[in-house]
Length: 250
Ligand code: PGA
Image (cartoon, rainbow, N blue to C red; front, side, top):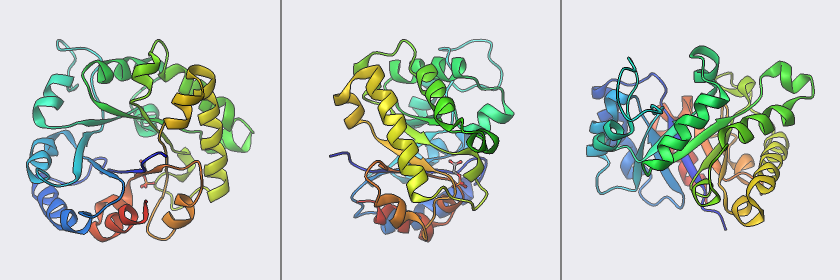
């Protein structure tokens, strides 16, 4: 049995004051959750979020991690910095990083290696663009991204990774994949993990769906046998909506 995991991806939203407001409202609403609960906040909110979630069942994550330990990497944040601030999860390879900030399968792999070496729980994002889905390339794209991300990673380390399948055309668009589309592609991704690491790792790996997941569609998505939770953008910014999603994941 895989324990579901619901992670909020706040993206570039919420100042420290707003972070305080959101977490204070959220914590009591999700205290009886049956799934793992994570909020992936902007770098500047991590220390505060870690402080505010102390003694709760909410874990704090970052939205990226540098591949190097330290040095001349302007604008990057290191594993040691994230660790000190209190992050235990980290999102790697989100499609917005791939689209706007030049992230590639190679850099995703380098960041994943660094996250694992430093004891983080990584959430690795994969997913196809609209033209790729329409061109019948969904599986090829997901395969390439998964194989690229896990290059050189041992089975023992791979077992610690969560994959988020996020079709790019569903992110922030209000256009969710159907339950069947999401389930089918996640099943396919699991088969790729099986090819790489065998059935035991594949069956144990948690694979989330992401892309306009909300209080209205969570029940249908979570009822699918391959879907182990969600990576939630827009709906994670509202405590009631996010709490509803969390409490629907059992
Ligand atoms: P969304 O974002 O829920 O706003 O579509 C999901 C994500 O990008 O992780």
